[in-house]
Image (tube, rainbow, N blue to C red; front, side, top):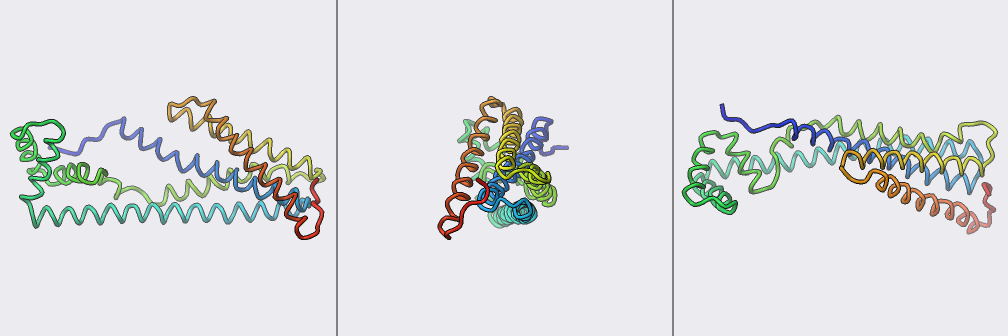
Length: 245
């Protein structure tokens, strides 16, 4: 029976695209939490204060990322479903116009008028494939997007963010560590984590993985520098001396 084609390559690409939630979640968790703990590490210096700020950033960030990903994915699927329903109505109410529209799309691809008419006539005998081709040509989307899971991307985003947040917090867990040592150790771990995420992201996207790792680590350095300066100068605005350095 005629069916919508599905290939191992498409499934592999779909799996690689799902990695986006994990890579983005870990990266954002490291960057955001590093910025927060660096600020409090320089401004306050107290281990308990920095840990409290880091844990709050971890919990709030993970929940926010998970909810945001869930709601964003849900909205995307609702838009796709609405487009599918609209197209179904148009195909039912104006079958000749929709037929002619798909013939026009086929002609744009280089088929002759007779070839395009033959192709669309054959497609029209299989409503599911007919709708699939119309959605792909008219809207540029795969209707199967509407059937994708809403829970997995949200969980992946939230958990990966939490995992990334633990990296810059780790040095502050050690008792008796000096504030300056904790800040530098947090930076070192964060940059190592970002570099590793960059290498992984580059390996699955056929980019130079070392350059990708250095790119993400570079942005991490910028976040650290801005947070460090903020932690040093903002307390001075309130006539307080930074405690960390």
